[in-house]
Image 1 (spheres, chains in turn red, yellow):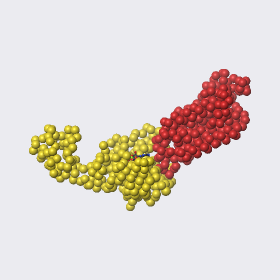
Image 2 (cartoon, chains in turn green, purple):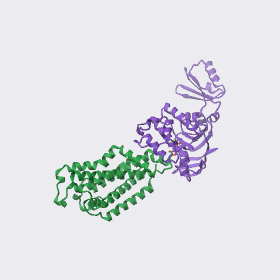
Image 3 (tube, chains in turn green, purple):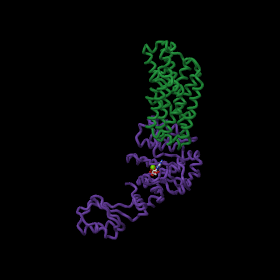
Image 4 (cartoon, chains in turn red, orange):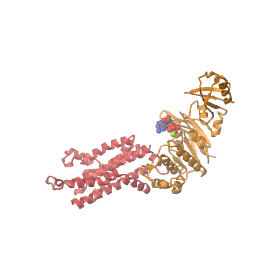
Length: 241
Length: 302
Ligand SMILES: Nc1ncnc2c1ncn2[C@@H]1O[C@H](COP(=O)(O)OP(=O)(O)O)[C@@H](O)[C@H]1O
Ligand SMILES: [Mg+2]
């Protein structure tokens, strides 16, 4: 299993677009936004926080959403289409291991992306590290897993790699929207903010644990539930060819 | 000794019957061909043997194992090259072999295997940069990495240029010489005739015949074809009247005369008597294509 993960990790690193978008892009966006003076000036309407303080959790959403909803279904659907999964079924190793390896690779990439974001945020813009590290870690993990489960569901149901790409783009856009990537969350109507809190990867819980308090256990439980439900359905309905 | 036994295999896709009561036995150490036109059910048949599809009827034994019930043990004894299966674009050849070797308890030495397949200098090359023939050889390497007793190779040379095809053929012979039983699925008559010890002819899901290439051809033995281009038009009834001639066909400017006995002599005498010159005259012996036409009533290759 380690060897599969190792190989898939190497393949991930050789895909320049994936590395740039998942690992570097959130940090680059932070640097760009942070270069705008207005966005790094404390705002009283905002509890004297700066825009970038609140926006880092959205940057985490971007990284996780890309990995779980873009990279994962695209890779899995391509592997199915090219017969990589079928070739696995002719060996003593079940092709499910290849899917698990994908999720592990995504977790690894997510961790690196977020650590980089935290470091640059701290060193360049003096953004605090998450105040509630344990809650933050738990949310990140559940967020990543719930998105991966949804990504696998897309891969399971899409007839081919192209439609997998289409469906996952829609899901990706939705998650990005509710995660505040297009419209900062504080500008959203109350209702949309609430929806975003329960939608993977739990932008509300990310923000709370970063800015100070423990994440709402109900939100975490919803994430866990989504992971379980989507994961089970994906596993049950997955086509290997 | 039979290492693969298939008895009355039936496989349906929804309503469509893809394999309809096929039976054959493969002996240890031979190259066994499964030959038939596209859509005949060859791939479906071997996928049932590989345990990738569950049959709707019949029994299969591979080295004494039931491919459905003993999947795990079957996987260690059977090497498979699927008709359509690629690797991730950016994986290096050596990485792929090293990875697949790790799936088996007692794998072959993959460096040696690569060398044997003429890929020693490609170990660090990414899969997407390989030529078609090299990709096929990687596929063969992956089928052999677990030191199987039986290797199933499906449409090994489809899409390869003639040189790469011939190179691949000699590899298949090497595999057999190393003691591995080979099941070779193909729709190329020439490939089956050249490589196989015995051939199962399959058409429209049914088994037509199992025999050696020579045995199959001998079923239409004595049959010959004379092909030529008459320089002046004439009435083909002159030829059809001959007792040696069974059929006269027009292919554009060419005439193809099929028959038995001393066909050539009979035909040329008639032509000489009528002062017709036959240009591009050729005589052809019956081959597997003819055997297939005789046995099924249609051509193997269109
Ligand atoms: N997965 C499938 N679903 C439905 N029909 C199939 C499937 N695979 C093959 N067939 C049909 O079954 C028949 C036999 O196919 P196949 O075994 O691939 O033939 P061959 O390998 O001899 O070309 C064909 O008519 C083909 O269209
Ligand atoms: Mg086929």
